[in-house]
Image 1 (cartoon, helix red, strand yellow):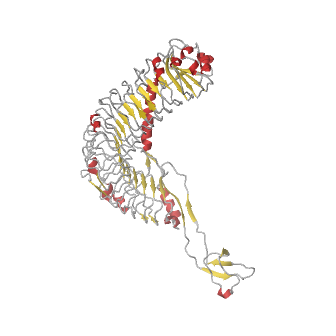
Image 2 (cartoon, one colour; image 1 turned 90 degrees about the vertical axis):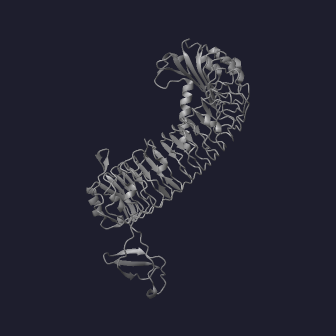
Image 3 (tube, helix red, strand yellow; image 1 turned 180 degrees about the horizontal axis):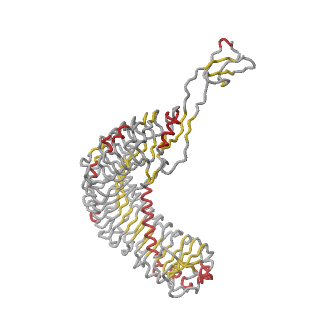
Amino acid sequence: MRKLSFILIATIMSTFLYSLLGITVGMSLHCAVRKEIDPCTCRKEYGSQNIYVKCERMISFDQVINALQNHFTPDDHITLEITFSNLTDMGAHKFEELKVLHIQNLRLLHDNLRNVTDDTFLGLNKIDFLSLADNDFTAIPKDIFSRMPTLKSLDFGRGHITQILEDDFVHTINLHHLLLPGNMINMIEKNSMPRTLRHLHLGRNQIPDLNGTLRNMHELEWLFINANQLTTLDGQLPDDVNNLVLIHASDNYLQHLPQEFKNLHRIKTLFFEHNKLLGLDGALAKSKKLQLLVVSHNNIQTITPDDFAEAESLEDLQMGYNNITAINGSLSPLRSLRCVNLTHNLLSEFSLQEIRGLRRLRLVDLSHNKISNITGRMENVVELETRVMDLKLDYNELHSLDGALSGLHGLKYLNLSHNHLTKISPDDLIGLEDLIWVDFSHNKLTTLDETSKTFLPSLERLFVNHNMLTELQHDFFGLPILCFADLSYNNIRTISRELVAHTRCNIHGSPGILGLNLEDNPVLCDSALPELISDLEVNNTRIYGTTQCIPSPLPVSLAFATSNNNSNIIEITPLNATNMQYLVENTDASSDQSENIVPEIHLEPPKTIIHHSLTDTENPKHVRTVD
């Protein structure tokens, strides 16, 4: 789940930064006429006058000036990036010395900058974006902004800034985007942030209190305050929140959501994982446009019908790793819901009526709970108002299904592994005509015979490993296109030659090979195994796996060797073999031959090994995706 949040944030921030930079991702032209700017390089963006210039590992700012001076026209819009350089002499120069009339974007990254003067930035009166990230600033160099009246985007990420003072951004009269992540900020003075901001990133700092600095920021749309030391957001959000669409506040110490959230009528995305929330308290009840809510890894115990009363646009609900004991009908208003994740909670029962009417559901994750009973069976199998594609019930305490899942339309992936199931009845799988993948592994099943009475026309992969199966007779009769069955680590001793009589693996309309994994099953030691293999291969079925076969005791006649030279060898002559010798351990060669007792003879049990090269359909490591 944390990984999912990281990917989402990375995607959002990448899009955010590209939009701030104004860089078009696509084909570019080589600046063939710019060879004289070496060691810097440049490329012209296709279809525009924008030119991207990069100078890396420069020994001084003076070298930058000598390389770039007088090499651009007034019509060129320049994005200049100087990285991993030593620009300690910058204070003795000015950007206007470059004779570049229109630097639109300027990025000075990893350049060991600590102090800069406002005069240095003379000549940047048309700049839109400035990044001084990954440098050594301990404070905001506020005077430089007086030279940049058109500045809209500013990045001071990953530095050593400790405080934000009231007048730090007083000259940024048109600033829309401010990034300050990964610093050491522990204090923000009130009214220190520009009221014109639309996107603010204060994540990964040490901020204990926002100090009311956001109250008058009515234009704010995105707010990143993750990984700080915040304990409350009460009274901290803008008093007019009509423009807020995203808040990322994960990894703090928040115990509740502010009731002001009821006024977040445009909010679409909320990240509040890894906090100390005890509940939602109805704060999101009126969030009609909310699409993604992440509140995993908290201490939430209860969710109520009022928590999502009007959240009709919510598509993705992540509430894993909490202490939730009941759902209480809270999901029923979520008509747009596609994914609900309730893994690692304390649910003891689940009713399918909780998701009744949710026709867009793709994933319901109820794994790692304490569910011992599933209720709310969809009685009308013709009814199509409830659809689920992927249902995860693994690592629960189910002993039986009692037909609860029958008629669950659209179900393609079903995981019931690591429960206590002892049988699967025909009613349990009725109406699951779309099911293509089912996992019953790590249960206590002793037979699959009842599945022969259920028709699963789409099932391709069946996992029943680590159970207590003893035989396979007509178990696959209702599985016409099965392509892989993992039956490993059972106690299967008998397999009927009729097992696959009605099964032909089918891969997107083409015939394939049905693979049976029988790893560590006694049937691999059966003397009739070669004949079984031949019979199954006629029906395009292959067996594979390994096991250790303990040989049956053979009648033997024993003749003791003469005890001389401390020899401890016993000659064993089986009735059907001659001259087979095995070392007998712990015999006493000096003892009287008439009193010599044959001790235990250690025989290395032979292995039965059956190997086939596996096709894709036989490979048990099947990765599945949800549309």
